[in-house]
Length: 390
Image (cartoon, rainbow, N blue to C red):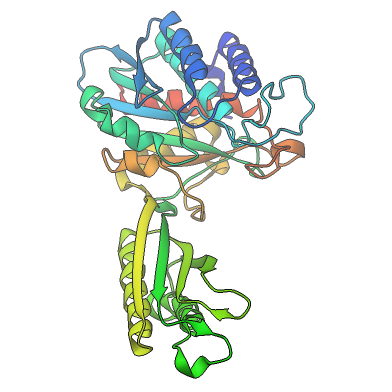
């Protein structure tokens, strides 16, 4: 590895201890106050200016060196998952039905490691904002921090994020320009028709048949309305009726979600869903209504910031360990809200290919790989020093 030696033994050992502490004491959602207090105390101990309760329970550290007006933000997530951990190692969760099953303990420890190194040894000219965000898992934390004046109070000119990937080799970093993680839009299609006794279908317009036609038609959005080179997934996950064994329902609700990698396709799917649902219902003398809510935006890596992240990754682990056009991920991240405020780039680092390090995220036997801590912290340091070069 190229520049992993930048991180001192003190910081390496510290990151392991910090991660294990956070892993043993998981907190979820916005209720991450103990974790936030722990992070804030460490930052303050290194002489970093600390702001707490940003977006309820977020923490922002501010480190300025030199006279430059340039600034960047580095973001990690604090929250755990409502999962009962099944691991038996010494640092397993001490809290029932909560665990760090997505590696946010590692993300936090890596950013703490970078903060310590940059505070003590950083060679840069400008300002680094260290953002520790609550409630990533439910997708509300980034927006809450933004609404609390995150970018007005801490005016970063660009922002960077990172996530571990189980099954990706240790020391590997992957990224891509453009749509990187999918949007998620929830939908609800409400159909109101004329139900009645199951023995007399000629006296009703059978909303069940109408709903079946709507469900089938939704799949034509992907196959006939979306560019075949684009990725879109439309999934029906619930069908709710007020019918019974011998009662054809009057009201049917169809629920689900759709995901894509561009704002244009988010809008396209919504428009076609409305046209199909209302049109099919009208043809059968029923009423159809479509409601949508985009819970996660597309995580979109900007061109310039992707080049910056690529250069930092190559300097950290070597060109042979960096993939610059990785496949986009179909899961979602509220980091996308932060990218709408400042251009940025989100990268993925390898968590390893063996044992619990290869178990998928959100698995009760997953664990973040301590050996990845040095990789992530080194990348953060390299990125900050390259972007804020003297």
